[in-house]
Amino acid sequence: MTRPTLKALSVHLFTATGAIFAMLALLAAVEANWAMMFLWLVVAFVVDGIDGPLARRYDVRTNAPIYDGVLLDLIIDYLTYVFIPAFALFGSDLLPGWTGWIATLVICFASALYFSDTRMKTKDYSFSSFPGCWNMVVLVFFATTPAPAIMLVVIAALAAAMFLPIRFVHPVRTEQWRWLTLPVALVWVLAAGWIAWDRFPVEAHPAFWPLIAASLYLLFAGPVQQYLGARAD
Image 1 (cartoon, rainbow, N blue to C red):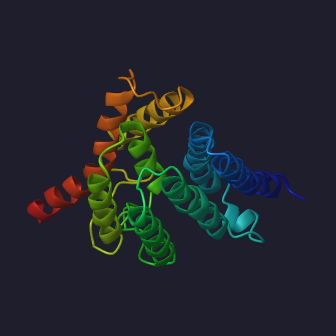
Image 2 (cartoon, rainbow, N blue to C red):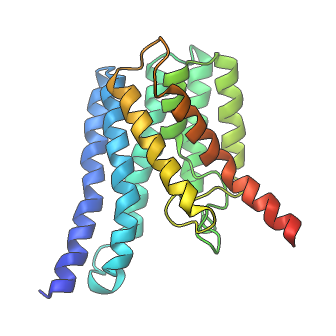
């Protein structure tokens, strides 16, 4: 086995660790240990942010084509971005009664369609619609505990945005404003991890506003870029 092949295979193995972190997150969720669940999801989020650049650097499609890295990534992403966060939203009673049922089923159904959409990425590798990052959305819900009506409105709007031509930035691959987007994404990871580590304290947390600011930037940077680009045309 050649050295390039070994390096490419190691990238696939690194990506596959996301399945391990997904299972650890699910086991924590079954025990209603939401803080630990989100810590594992944050770890999986970091892996997902690193494996793409590694895959391109070591050209896994050429050097280790026996495994489909894109498919592997999508399988793990559905677990960590959608399925487990949706379970947490329902199991935690943040949305009580029928609201939890509807929100959870809408998230899973809409995301299944989105993850199979061949038009997921734009030419500049941004996302052409809301990329189903429900892990980030639900973590912010846990950190802020908004009213159920507000959560339902946010979920409905983002679920609809998965089928609309609204641009959302990819923290690593979108070149426009990447000098800002990458540090903001890092702030989000650190703030989310810190708040989850402290088990979502009710009182004000030092990472609360950095988390909110980073979330708003990652949510609206793409639509702003899209708007400015349309005006320039």
